[in-house]
Length: 503
Image (cartoon, rainbow, N blue to C red; front, side):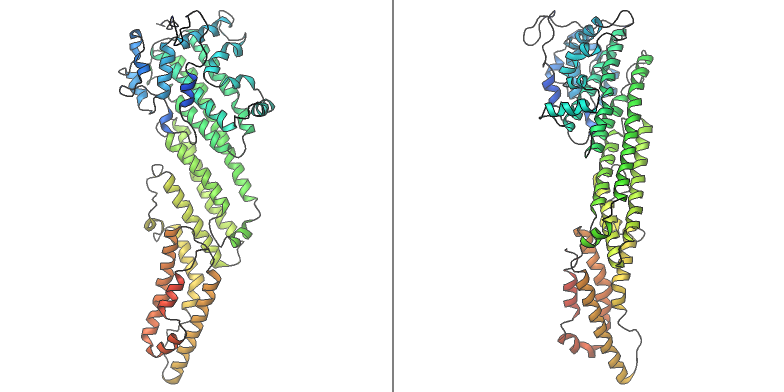
């Protein structure tokens, strides 16, 4: 049985009478104070809680105790983390503010169907102003949004996105509070649908205007929508209102699917952008094989997506999680293939494989650092990244073969008797030293930005070249005088290798 909405209190915090319009700003400051900047965190979804309840929520009238922190529905929501929005919504409902907004909505809606066909903008104006998204009712197209941004210099598009996220979360929190208390009148349902519809109507306009921060902003909205849509699961709230939950949940699910499509299309744009970049060969040479800007760009996108995956993995619909998971792995595979293809434009094979090593190591490092919980098999440990079967190890071995294999090959393995023996050994030593110094001079200013990888690569060169050189000198002690005169002792050469790859 549907219950009555709580009445507006006789006096608000400033003494306003119940029959007066609510004072704007009672809750807006608290809503604005909840941080949603950057990546949308898992903790943003509201919840009920015992010890976390504020003094404001404790002041709720006793007749609303039916949806206190001890209820099954409250426990279901508590697992979603941050309770700030839940506290605010609980206060709005218990104060009667949400009920007053529903009444205002009913007054301008044509009876009896409540199709909010009269003047929904006017009916929702006070409500959206309190939610800090009154601008939503002012824009209907791209020029309108751009004009809004010009008229309000303090506002940025990211700021509007954050306000949108706060508003949707508070709206869903209010709806949930009403459902907990069994306030499921047609007016509440239509008011809820109208509020959500108005917010969703501006999403496409925002997406059109978004440019550099498009992916992050869409991910933020996507994570929020998926998170709150999970709330509208009949099992979590109440099996008594399945039609209401299905209807509202369906609206959110459709918007989540739409945003998921935008994320995929945005990544298509990213792929096209980096593929058409004609500076690959120039930048590989100029950067000395270091991590390419396009690699960093795509990895920024992957980090944003993997962080979004992590934040919503316990709350979003399964198909949305699966789609994002698939997109992340497809993007990583795409990036690896693109790097290999673009590296083919490099005429110096040593530089090519150093470039591939730097970039593949960067991909593994960033991904493992950004979301270890996303893929527990990933690790930032150097030993795992350079395991024999790893991609990084294969590129390192290829680099060592093409860069230093010919240096070591200058030292013969065959032994010849008599004077020819000394001549061959001396000649081979000269060739070895020449090849070493030539390779060293060519690669001295090449760059390996990661210090762990840089040390590992220097050690690998030392192990392969200096160790072989030292063994050769031990087998031919008569060359000691020549080595000393040329200052080409193993220790000197090893010290030179310690200066490689600083850029």
